[in-house]
Image 1 (cartoon, protein in one colour):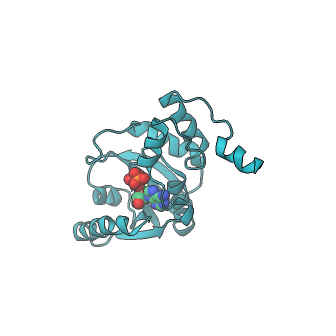
Image 2: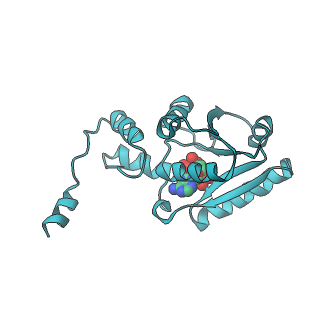
Length: 175
Ligand code: ADP
């Protein structure tokens, strides 16, 4: 059984995360998506349970997929799941520096656990949960950046009316 853990704060899950999960499912027998409370990100928009529930809702029941939340040391969690690998998504060179450090530290703590990096698709390269939160909090549309149910949750959270066609799109059509 090839099992990997995909950890993240997923606050909220984006289409970039969904893409990584789907590609990881093609590589491993089982993917455990681990929703973590990151001590560096002091305030979160959604609770751990809400974040996990949105990932489950977006992906539905899939063989080989589990979504759990946890707090604590990642490598200990990976060992408790009897997983062999940690999956990480890479967007830009800026991700690499941090992820490289984390991978080396985790290897030091648990030499038998490998970190596997999946490169983002170009369309998701600039997508992050923090930018989604910021756009939504300012009333902008995050359509296409997050799964539809997350889009709705963000609209509810920030009291935004459902999006109509963007005005610039109408202009483009007219031209
Ligand atoms: P964010 O950085 O968006 O707040 P997380 O902390 O939840 O996201 O990240 C969880 C994992 O998903 C990390 O490995 C991160 O590099 C990866 N990831 C985040 N956004 C994307 C994306 N758009 N494309 C690919 N991987 C991503």
